[in-house]
Amino acid sequence: MHLCRMMGLLVFAHTAVAVCAATPEEVLERVNLYRALHGLPKVTLNAALSSACAAHASYIDQNRSADPYTEVSGAPGFTSEGKAVAPEIIFTFSHTGNAAIDFFFSTYGFRGFLLADDFTTAGYGESPGTNGGSAVAVLRVGPVHKPTRIESPKNGTKGQAATKAIQALSEAAGQKGLDIVLYGSTFTSVAEVVSTSITVAGSPVAHTVSVQTTSASNADKKGDIILTPSGPLPVGALVSIVIDYREDGVAKHKEWSFTTSSTGLFNPSEAGTGGTVGGGSSNSNTDTDGDGFPDELENALGTSASDGVSTPTGAAAQKENLTVTKASVGLNFARPLSDKISVDGLLPVPDGFNVDGVKVTADIGGVIRTFTLSSKGASPTGVPESFKLRIKAAGGIVAAQEAKFGIKLSKGDFGAALSDESFSNTSVTAQPVTLPVLVFFNGRLLRADHPLSYNAKSGKSGRAK
Image (cartoon, rainbow, N blue to C red; front, side, top):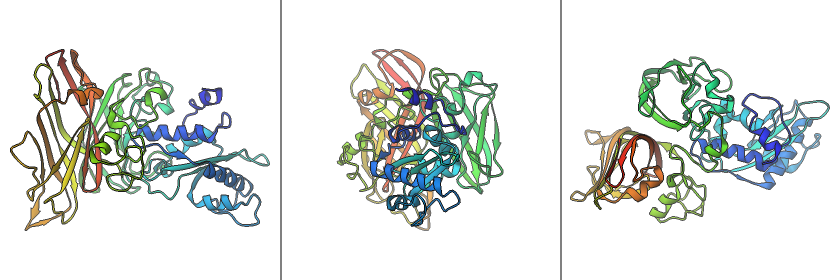
């Protein structure tokens, strides 16, 4: 890693100083780091788009009072390629390189573009500033849709990185723990907190709770729920968050987990750039073609894990959060065909939904099963593996709802599939583990990374709940 990149890693959000010029490849690495921390697939770099972004950055630099989202023929710096890319960019003055990406991510209006599921191809260019003016950075994000909700620590440091560490040198240096935020759905959301919990290895962490009541600039907006631990979070620890609340009068439940780095510093090698979230090296995070469907799930469903066009839906996955209310794993290392898994949660059901004949596929840490449901929402009976979806209907009419589901797998050998989630045949006590649960249902891929505590005796058994 050369000096510019090493220094670039130390440029924090809201910093307006460009350390030195960054290449488009380096900037894309920063973009993909942020996306990986949210479990999103990598974005690819397009050289022609980067050339167009550089041309348009020069145009903005030379026409600072003009509309930055188009180009006018005859104006200084006009190019046809710059005009073509102009409607699909975000830009900033003063920030360049990694500092520009940090600024985009720390700003609510820009952050949504970086984390959009349909942001797949990027270009990047910059202009150094003319006549003493500040530099200009341009990132092509495309005609994407902003996500309406992100469940994550503040400013996005989810996964194998210290909470909000991109803005802090060390958690240990803080008087308080760094903020953990559940972002509101819109700028006008009204949130009312019912209950919250922060736990580390099953032990509660004292914290205060506040709700953002106005839409501020950058990271905070109305409806954000902010949890502030009373002390620094421990390093190298799995932190689990559960929030029950009402948003605009509707009861909601969200939970997620992340792992602080081993030093408390932001560590890109621990964070990873390939979609790692929660489960670390879990195969449930491997998505070779970047289409949003993990390789193991595509292999099970008969689509190509190396072709982004070949997917179970014919399009990239629109990732959504799955609510898991309870899960448990039981492994028997001494007796074959004696393992069991249980998962309960909620699935979104639309108005007028007919469940009869619907197929649902569950991927639980690499244990993948497909079920065909009856008119009562149940898979066939008399087998050791079952799926039940409890849909409420009034007068035979199904209204949109969050329907309870339950998955029960028994009489299986699941240890090998779960080994990459740290369910090992070794003696451990209260070891924090993360169980990835993915459900492909009604054309939607939903995922939860559910925290569990694992106890095991080598050669005998392992239990997690």
